[in-house]
Length: 341
Image 1 (cartoon, helix red, strand yellow):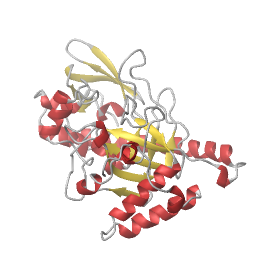
Image 2 (image 1 turned 120 degrees about the vertical axis):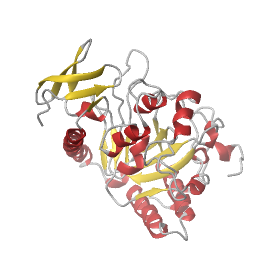
Image 3 (image 1 turned 45 degrees about the vertical axis):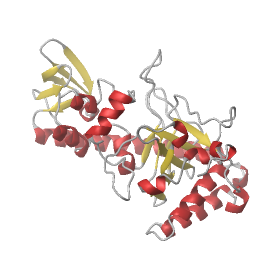
Image 4 (image 1 turned 180 degrees about the vertical axis):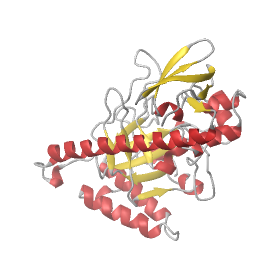
């Protein structure tokens, strides 16, 4: 789309004019500086066209290009996996399952949904920035910080997401059913894409969070899904897992409180201490994954998700060639400490 000579806004540099445009870049002249930006992806995070109709069209273009790029990556990834695993007997393969540590997000929260489906409430935006000092939430590039500082309105913040723009991973997690490995936020490698190792189709993805003012041992599982797209990541793009299958389950706030992550998992050292560290993801065994799905299936009895939860458990057990009986009882941190859960 031709946006030459159009006015754009940047929260740091102010209003500028697009003075040059190529297939994948634009050059903007601001009052005190000239800047180059990637096109059209920059309109998902950093720039906004003053012409709202054009802004919406550019965001649609960015979304389409993003989907095409992810589809190409997924196809490449599937080809690689097929080549790697074609000579390995199915029952000898160990599928790593991945757990993500997510900042708490109450966007879209209801009696049936923990959140993670929209922009956070004002109180949680303030909590994540002022109290927890979350790295992305506190970044100058984050729209939530701009809102908290009065630089943009609540309407502008919500519109940025509604029109396909990027706010944060968490706000769209249960809308897109996609979890990203993230980028390095500090140190010499700041900005470098993080990778996911060995996750593949039919691995289980577990999404976890801590509610405000709770400790690490109170980390909750709020959703699970069966991976059907996985990308390790490279030097430019971070790794991700996602699903378009029906094997995905979100837990209600009350259900999530009955699914403490540390009931199922323990660190290799200091097995009685609930400690995560700075990484955004970690891996768990098939046994732990089956235990989690088994408890979710029990929680979902009597709900509209009952049949799906049981089928999800049955299918996963077949994939990893085990059973609920073989998985046995959880042996995580809380169980080792005899904490009642």
